[in-house]
Amino acid sequence: MNNIFRSVGLTLAVSTIVSFALLLANISFLTSFIVVTIAQFIVFFIVGSVLEFINEIKLKEINALRLTEYSKQSLEIECPCFKKHKQVIPISLSSPNSYKCGECGKNNNVYITAEAVHVTEPISLV
Image (tube, rainbow, N blue to C red; front, side):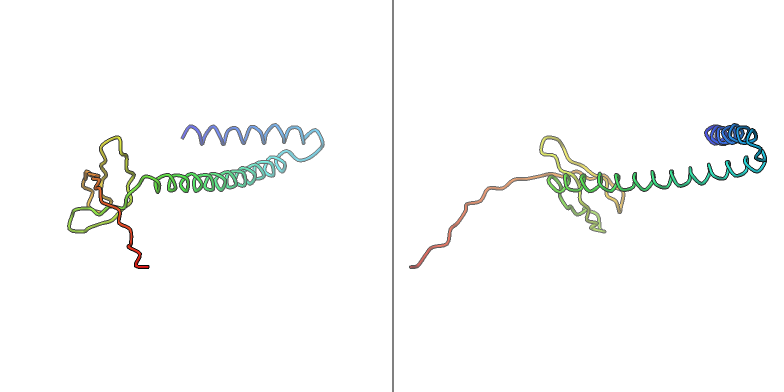
């Protein structure tokens, strides 16, 4: 709430200073005050919108990078509850893995097992 009052106060202060400067050039104080105040709100809205758009693009880039990193060490796993909800979770081979199901809300542990098998090669009959 203090930020809003500070922002409006700063805007009105700038409008007052500019209006006094324009008063020296024989331009009406009230007219210039209103025009400068409205112009500041318009400029701040445009700048805020552009910055928000830029931040959204950066956030999407960060999320895309995060997903590519997760795809390197992630696993699609099915919750053991009756809903069998599937979700992609990050996997670490150096620490215990657990996650909270997005559907039922229960915490689950993930156990990773390794299995060795022989590699077979087809026999050539020629």
